[in-house]
Image (cartoon, rainbow, N blue to C red; front, side):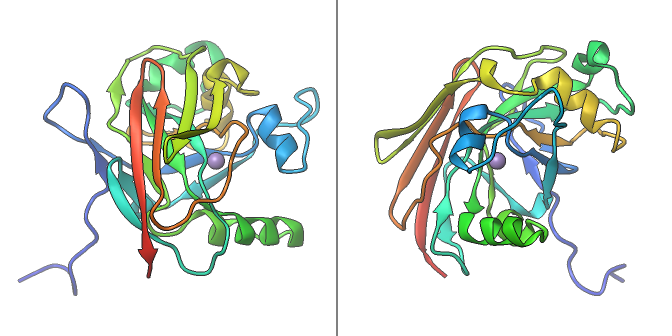
Length: 233
Ligand code: MN
């Protein structure tokens, strides 16, 4: 007899370059406003001397593998791309120092934090949670994970093209809070686990996409990520 009333959801997982085994995803953390030029285009500024990083989460069930076609989501007229470096953790850690943060790193991926911008900004301006804008079906797009155990990425070009036109182009060295700082800070609030993904934030150039658009992102030395936008549901 089945232990469950109905089929439990499938485990979210991603392919790993050079491995037949997949990476089981535990949680998806996302960093808000982690490039100055993107914070500015959102009408906010970040002062690292007084501000601390902030986070939101996406459910593992929102994960979509690179190459997919996703439906244009409901409830929005301003569906945006955010191209991001994704850190994949392979070991647990709690209250980790910046100096030890690399020990948690399994590898990296190229991700798209797809966003219902109109709903996110409405929530932001009313002081409400961001879930409607950020945590919805097929909103966390991710490439294969590229194993780089213990390595801290500090510099790499990051770019996104839509229908062959460059929309976002920057470098990981412009992250306000870098990979070490993010892992250490997040581990003050969560008992980080193997399988956790961290979307590190997007550079400037976020913009709306429409049905029929084809997105193609790249982080130099990491991976490519592709997404097609399908018809509305
Ligand atoms: Mn983002």
